[in-house]
Image (cartoon, rainbow, N blue to C red; front, top):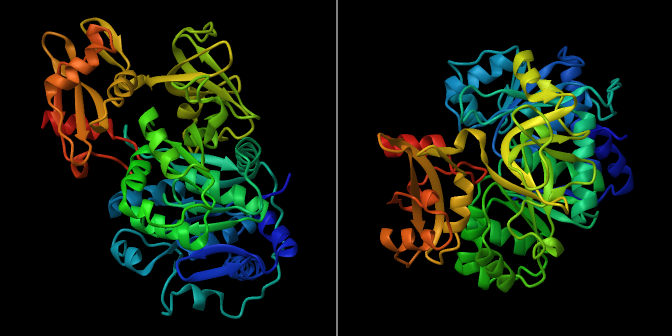
Length: 502
């Protein structure tokens, strides 16, 4: 089994002059990146950092982020990627929870945290000042540091979004990440000639674990977007001849609706990965009309699983169009009843997953770890069912299931039905307090640009496709900019409820 640090050194020997990373106008080859990472790792060693020490990274998606991460894990340290969209207080809480002893940050973010964080080591990733990365590594050699790193050693602590309360640190080992990379490579046809584009932030498990690391393992190329916009992503695909990339459905719609999508040469783009929300058939058809050569891989996962669990491949779509696909090659899935017995085919229960990429633990949270991991199975907190061909059908988060009039309504089932309406761009279903129903099924809708649709029309559309108790009692319309959607494309149900309740 090859460790993350070895991916880089191995490909520095195989492809010394091949471009490893593209960051705007900057390009770095594998051999040069390897030497740079060694200098950072040696500087960390000279500063007293050792195996198992935690070091945080707070920056947008830039070359220095990747170099710092690779140096930390090459030395045997544990990287703690931080979400730069959080407040200074939230970031400080995460740093404290992780017990990080050092921080790599951009100058602007470092200034914002000046009053909240004081660590033994603070390195600024941009600029030339006394705390800069350039000053930190000055005088340190390019030879690889001697470090005893084992497959089961922690590689990274990724903090969950915290949308349901205080976020938890997911500890993933080098082995976890290796198997996650292998799953992606084998089941989605990645190869060394690929150039993947990272449009979501590197502190998100999808960008780091599912696209950067598999391509690093292969010796392929990674193109970074420091800040996503549909225009920048389309121009980058065309200019860098990008072959694949991930977007949530909301970003996918922004891309294929953008005028540049029909003007630029996107013929290099062969695989479009989608996850984190519903991708209706009409959106698939628009993608195919725009890019006839592209294959769509619809994926499901969660950070605790490494993160990727299932994939619906292009060739399987017509067999199970409403599913989230089948388990990846080195994964098992099952559906559990409340008594933890296995549910039969077709019955809805909690989705549990098992495989070598499942997390080691929640950092310093033994009770939460014990609640999530039973007999080797990770309990996802998601409701789903299996068919007799092994396809998984997602129903809802356990916490998002709506109880109305004594009956259970799965919000995603309603969202999927309404998303088929040609005038609906985004839809979120939530349960709001109701004296009569307990919870009232409510649809929050963003119409497609240039199209109008009435509440009565949406409700009639729903009645044609859903049991009467599942049809929303009312519809609320929002402009796209006001729909609470996070950086990974998920509608934030808790924020949506708060917005409606006031």
